[in-house]
Image 1 (cartoon, rainbow, N blue to C red):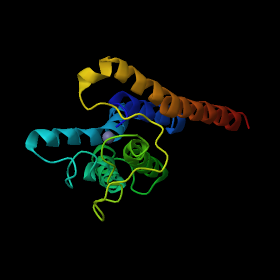
Image 2: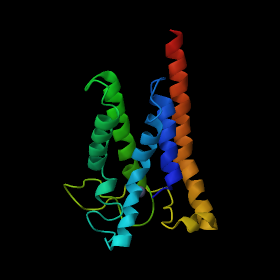
Image 3: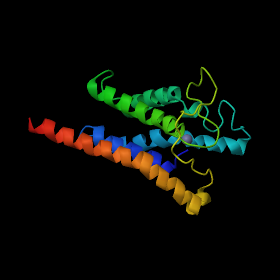
Image 4: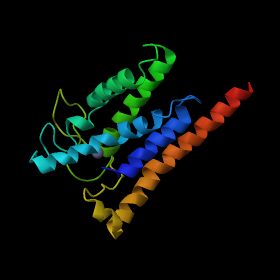
Length: 181
Ligand SMILES: [Zn+2]
C-alpha cells in the first residue's frame, strides 16, 4: 500500500479540486475515510485471516465493487436530505466511489506484497498493473520512521502527491477561467 497519509492526500486534493464551494463539514472526514478505510483489512491478520483470503489484506475491501457499496451507503446515510439522482447527489456518490476505487488502483501500482483483488467479489485473483513505480509501504507503523520509510515516501511524493497537486492546480485554473466568462 502507499501510506495512509498519501491516500488521505488524494482525498483532500480531489475534494479541493472538484467539490462544490459549499459542502457540509462531514464531507471531508467521509472523503478521507473512503480513500483510506480499505487498509483496515490489515486487522484481519490479528484474526488469522490469511493475506490471500477473500477478506485478507488487499482482498475484497480493496475492490471497486466495495467502493460502490461504501459510496452508496455513505450517500444514503449522510446525505439523505439530498434528492436522489440530483446533481449534488451524483457528485457525492461518484466522488466517494472514485476515492474508494482509487485506493486499490494506487495499491496496484506498488512494487510489493500480494496483488489487489480488483475484480472481487467476481474473481478473487490478485492483480498488479504492468507498471509499478510506487514503492510498497511497510505494514508496520514503526517501519515508516526508518530509511526505508523515507524512501517509500519519496516515491509516493513523486508518483502520487505531485500528479494530484498538479491536477488540483489545473482544476483551479479551469474554475477561475470558467468563473470569469
Ligand atoms: Zn491498501
